[in-house]
Length: 157
Image (tube, rainbow, N blue to C red; front, side):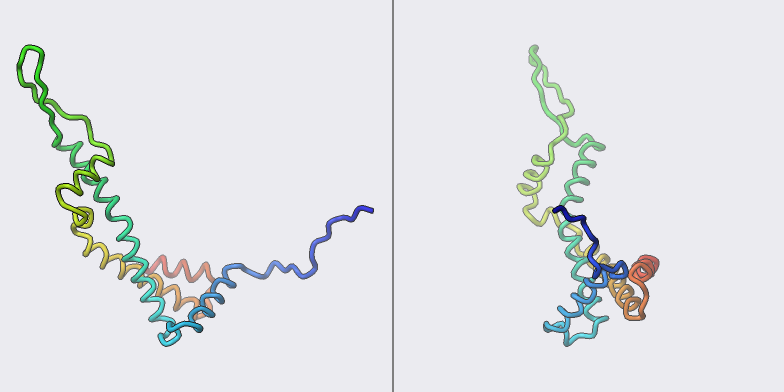
């Protein structure tokens, strides 16, 4: 006896997964030391950390990209070649690879060479993300839909 598939009767289309995530975040907040902070302060703190962490991860890659672009534009890599007749010829060296740029930066500047000037970007992104998180949280607290809250945060951002 074969049975045909029947859709479950308990399934409803009005249930939105993102609402469950919001409730989970609220449950997490109420069960941790974050419950001592108002939700707006928690959003501002989370946004600041997210902005700073994002810059901390992306900045070294941006530094490497910039170093390679400057090298190509300024022809800063040269090589000396001795011709068969004994003449010294100065030519442009082939562009360095990403690994070569990493090694040269580490040798010349150490690990800090990847983070020169990061402080300004980190502070700026921390403020931007804190604002976006705070506006999004305030809009959700004002019973905006998730899409409207995200759009509001995006406009303010």
